[in-house]
Image (cartoon, rainbow, N blue to C red):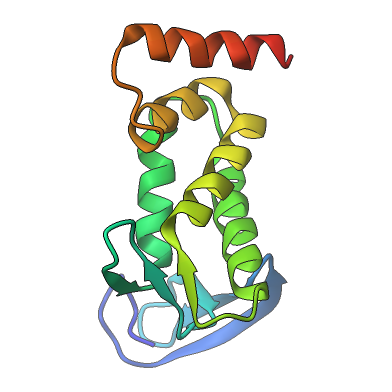
Length: 148
């Protein structure tokens, strides 16, 4: 593991802990002594089937990016966002399938955001649900408010 501070190729593991869906390792550079954290995730041979029939490999970073955009400038801790990404990845991989539809992943994201932050839910829903105009957005907000 290369040190992100000085680029030296040798580090030692100071501490290892299991995090939700990953392994967290605290490392120390043998050259400069700086410490940093790495996360290890299991690579999945999972394909996502898009609505137009295209297939692309599962990409945890793409999922994280979409959720972060919906949650931009919202008072949500990064740990909660990572927890949602872990939760969705666990549900998708626990299906035991080699392919999963993007619509299923989108529904999982909507469900998670609905519990996490209603504004982020609406932001994501505008794009994912393809809400065509303000009346449709208002109807979705009204549905959300009725459920509370």
